Length: 227
Image 1 (cartoon, helix red, strand yellow):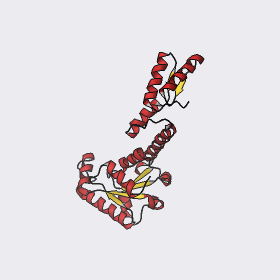
Image 2 (cartoon, rainbow, N blue to C red):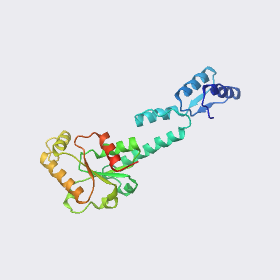
Image 3 (cartoon, rainbow, N blue to C red):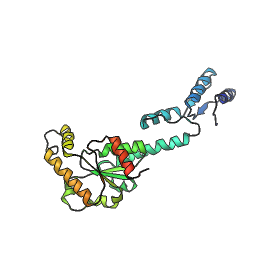
Image 4 (cartoon, one colour):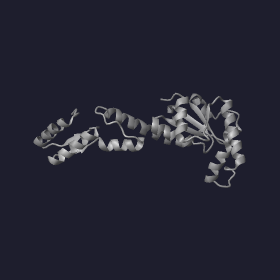
């Protein structure tokens, strides 16, 4: 254990060869991993790379190469699995599902359909490891002058998303062309109703008309001081 230099690899390989054993390693340094596997093959010693596949998977999920510093394996494991757990949470609590679990959320996004709630939640989970849920505001919610019952215990976690009616009409018309749902008149009405509700109950909201998902997520992290 505790192999930090190329010179130590020869000793490990010699021990394994003399004992007829197998090397199973968790080296995070790519150069050391490569040297060990190459020299083990030359010496006809079986070697199993336990860390390489995990690091490759982490790079794919997180969108960046993990640091290859010895001693960080536990931190890398924790970072990877924390983000996977956050992604699973956001998927399980998407679009108003499983409200009984929302108490574990760090943020709950609210807004009408097609304002970017789902992709923002997933980005918050994948990039920051934040547990994010979302709730779609619909006609039944606007019919009442009260905040939806399921959202009341979560008031301090709520953050709204809104959008310009013309942009919402464009987005919805691509999904359901010619429908009442996508009509500019209905988009104007829903945006107005949603913003009125958020203002009435003191829910901060963000206009996402010209923002990318990355920008929305980063702004919310900053505004709500999420960690």
